Image 1 (cartoon, rainbow, N blue to C red):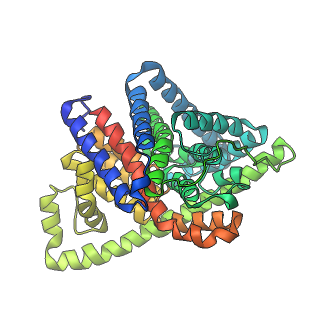
Image 2 (image 1 turned 90 degrees about the horizontal axis):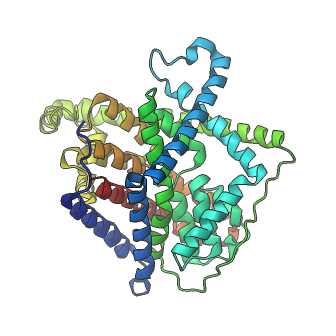
Image 3 (image 1 turned 120 degrees about the horizontal axis):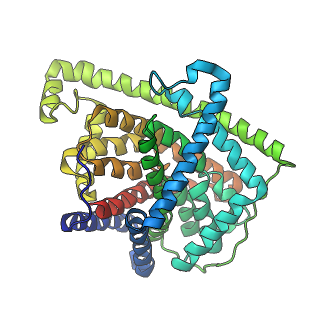
Length: 437
């Protein structure tokens, strides 16, 4: 794999082209182009670029993210201690990494910890501080919006809005849209460990590498969500800069919080495992039609293998998605040799979910499909978000419970919020790719 060579003029030009393309798509979807606050857009982009520069080139910032990543890895190690107690020698990684055992089990421990930290009020304090910083750097967002955007960096897309549940019924369309986009464009802390375990495998260096970039991707998504949401639905009403965190832990003590978080983690683990089983089996079924029947009897399999140099074995759904999204990936700054591969991953994430896409990315990385290290880094950012078709139903359902009188408005924003959420991840990938070179 060819390593990144650092910042240069070509990466700058490709990055600028990618940023223009992402902003252009958001502008096309905008409901009121004349009211777009370009000062807010410029501030958000500047903040993203500063974040990327700091993470990659400012030593103490980079070290901070690495130490934070190592903390996540240490927590994964603690999870494996519990797994080893339950299944003994079957928990060993000597014969390879078993995704169900070595990655998904971390969902239970992380969910329990999040519940405990919420009971102690730690998460609320961190979210409030991050919200305060966002509102100072990006003028034009309300206190409630700042809280939910900051909350989505640490919590899930249906959990974070609970922090402002008393404000949800009073929100107008642009404010609700920002709440939804921030949920689509970020990930939850509870799944971070699973991603790290999946991508890093048993290699400590790879684990730190992906932990650092996954953490930075989640943080960088916050200003990008604000920028793109405000471009598509510009704010036309009065902005209330004050909001208080309304969500308090309902648990009576720490043990109850741990027990509740553990139960939620079990449900999450089973749900993710079941979705992966079904979606991967579904992809195999579709590939049987495309590759096993159409490609085999039309000769397309051989043609695909020839034009891709063996990177694609046949006329698969992954190849089709990659070809469809390859032009966008080129504009985004993905190296030409990898643009079909990376485009395929983005397509799988949007049509299925990010777990399936990360699983595919891990397999392709281990198989040597990626030519450039930059493509791996950009893919990590591209896939870091909940923007997929299934999330529309989850988000609409969760918000509708908090504001039933706005169910039709929320449902009408669902598809656009998914598009904007996908653009959030693409914009983060463009910025990091431009800086990385």
